[in-house]
Length: 339
Ligand code: NAP
Ligand code: 3JM
View 1 (cartoon, rainbow, N blue to C red):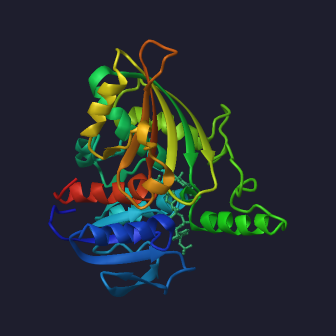
View 2 (spheres, rainbow, N blue to C red):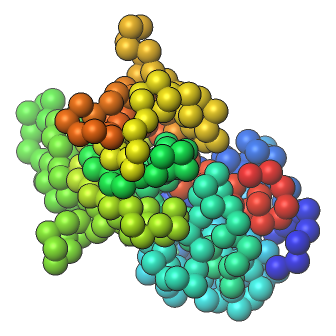
């Protein structure tokens, strides 16, 4: 791709929860476009979406969809990226991929622009966007790692249903209505009833007993931070609210840092907003994070069970910073704009 100020962008998965959020974010941030192409499966081809006040029609994704496209934002699932990202690259586009398909490939940059923007420019056609749970956690971890070194992270997530797509949101809302009416519930998207429940199972189970979502946090943390020595262990749980993920994050550091020092660091950390005043009942919650850009951090405390430890509570909108916004920020760096 030539480095130009205005570019032709394609969104693959434009009718989905992430794709529609990409559309809003490109509009909000006045992304410099020459053209916007919306792509999805045959199921939603022909539907329209409003962009900058005008209807744009969704086209069916084919191998030929990428002619003239400079940047292709993919969020239609791992198998779609596996099949179609190579066609986009062949046509000369840079792919920014929201799926897990390429994330562990050492040749492919895995980028959070506030943390490792320099990685963007070593791409060979594809740049991966990390998992939502990893992005929001690392925005809070990075300043601590730079200051005192992070040895080990123990994280438990409280993830909203929108992370599993539009059909998952609808299923949770419908199950809630059925449960309140005392009617039978048949799970479809989730392995169990999600309404009024907590499910410790996101993505598939791996041979080691962890879920793939949990392992993504382990693998992606090391790659993004460029430090294989950071130990990570994770438990990922799905909860019945629509938007934003929350995380209880325990960090063991290499040397001592106080809670006040962490607050000071995070007050001016890029992509982070401190929300930490227990005396006023102020701390992040999904209803505060939804629809907003930052990774909110609060409940910062010293872990009194070990010499060098910090506990914190991190909340961010999984469809925005966790997916669409991070991808658009990568595109902005690519074209030489703001990050
Ligand atoms: P979603 O609401 O279910 O939307 C899926 C989108 O993919 C729809 O636009 C759908 O089009 C399209 N699609 C599905 N199969 C297709 C095919 N064979 N060809 C073309 N388009 C196809 O899901 P979502 O929440 O937006 O998530 C989409 C993907 O983004 C996920 O599978 C995941 O890989 C990734 N994701 C990443 C993060 C992250 O943390 N970075 C977070 C959430 C999701 P139709 O309307 O035509 O079916
Ligand atoms: C978030 O098609 C798929 O297998 C997609 C599953 C998925 C992913 C993923 O693995 O790409 C759903 C929701 C993610 C993600 O960001 O890792």
